[in-house]
Structure formats: C-alpha cells, structure tokens
Length: 118
Image 1 (tube, rainbow, N blue to C red):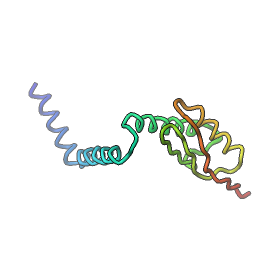
Image 2 (spheres, rainbow, N blue to C red):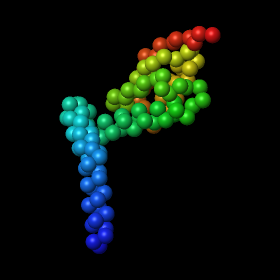
Image 3 (cartoon, one colour):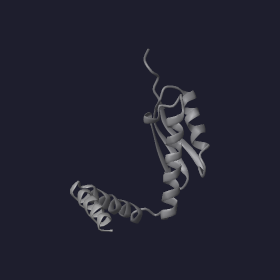
C-alpha cells in the first residue's frame, strides 16, 4: 500500500512539475468558458464535435481528399466545409463524404477550386 501511495505521489508531482497539470486545468477552464459562451447545449456541442471528428476521419482515410486542405465546422448538425480543392469532382466527393456521417443535418461547401499547376 505504501508503494502504491509513493508511486501516485511521484507521478502526481512529476505531472505538476512538468506543467501538464496546469495545461489540463487551463484546457478545462477554456472548455468551460466555450460552453458558457455558446447558446448550444453541452450535448449539442458534443454531437457537433463528434460530427466534425467523423467528417475529418473520413477525409483522412480517403485516397482522393487531402484532409489538411479542408476545414470542417459543425453547428447544430450543419457542416460547413472550407478550403481549397483541385477540382469540382473532389469538392463533390468531400460533400458526399460529409453527408454520410451520422447525425449530419446538412452540408454547405465554401470550398474554392484552385487547379494544380502542371
């Protein structure tokens, strides 16, 4: 029992000294402030976050989409896609992938077609 207490104490102390504790506290405070300044419920914010994550995951796994080139914002189940894509086909494909994610209400594309130079 004493060994377990020592391990926990050392782990907690190293966590505190490394600054991780303050980052965790700061992150929790920032999240709390975000929730307080948003008219959506905490459960809706969680659903929107899950939708955004689901869309980004599909983009990452897709062989045609460059996930880092497309930003995804979600509000009340409505997804907005921002970024640059090389052609209309890729834009349409990104919209279809986003629509296929659970709980998506609608998808709006604000992507810009920027053809790649040869």
